[in-house]
Image 1 (cartoon, helix red, strand yellow):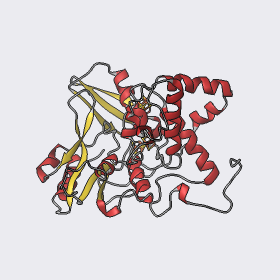
Image 2 (image 1 turned 180 degrees about the vertical axis):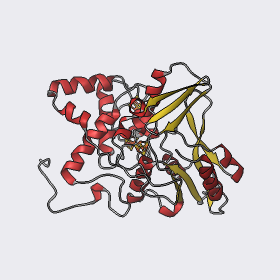
Image 3 (image 1 turned 30 degrees about the vertical axis):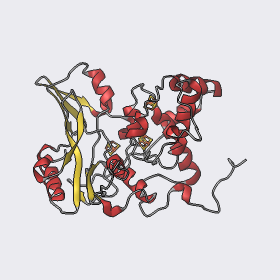
Length: 327
Ligand code: SF4
Ligand code: SF4
Ligand code: SF4
């Protein structure tokens, strides 16, 4: 379990530095089981910071938003560093962005949390529907202690964690300036169980499955906005000249959008699951991401966001790279 006092001290120490603009972390939300991102601009703000299994957001999206602020005329950008609280999986996004030179390492102060798993908010809502206050979730070894209206129940983690935590290879952040607590080593492996099962289906069944999923898409772009690796200054779906994807919500344009996004993330997606978590239509976007991740691992022995010194996949070339897919 993460010591919140230690976390608050680290936030205080970071925001007290002259070269830090703000620190982003988590605070208890005002609704149900939610936690929300929160900001410290002065040392006293650190007192509201928490870490619990409800801290699901990947906050490494924030330094990327800062890189493209809408500045008023005559206003100078504040170039000080941003402090960010990250779990193991979140830290891979920062590593990947550093590799891509989307961010300078000296622009972030990383407060790392060794993580034993978060809850899947949708599973939690299903188990405890309609609870909007007096709720709490604590880490308790291989269980979560869920308190609702003063009553605590212990539930096996396996029932509440998202798939990514079941196979988490990097519970300790890969890159950090301050670590809260001790490193955690993983003995888990990504087994691509769901992808392997899906691959056994016929082409027709695969198409029918994804057609049904993409048909639900309302093109809200929540998946894009929550994704730390979707940081293009202008997204191709917002471009009008040329217009790559029409704005109409129909199966053809929805398919184009979802596949284009998945391929833009090929070799870059770090599997944090923010896209799927934020999708209001429950489209299983991680199934698509995992299929591409598996192909890349098998073909190029490459994993996104694990080595800041390495070049991004699409900027690397090895003479023995497989090329059967080139027509
Ligand atoms: S994937 Fe790993 S680091 Fe990320 S929330 Fe799950 S256990 Fe924590
Ligand atoms: S979040 Fe879901 S519904 Fe919204 S654009 Fe993405 S896939 Fe479509
Ligand atoms: S595509 Fe989804 S899982 Fe991959 S980095 Fe973006 S939000 Fe995370």
